[in-house]
Length: 87
Image (tube, rainbow, N blue to C red; front, side):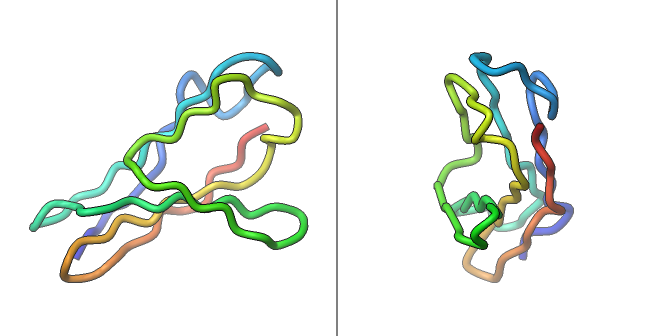
């Protein structure tokens, strides 16, 4: 199953409004990761999920602040990254 899953934020976790932000999910897995799911924990405890190893916000707004994590899954199992806080 996937392991050592983490999220990399570029250019950083502190972003100016209007800039772009890319979050990349990195995981070690054999067999390879088949899908990635992105989760955002917001104030209402709702979940947003998006698939793919990278998640890009073209123009960051103040509403994009929050906590994000990814889940990497292959046919054996799944592993979630630690939560990353974006400001």
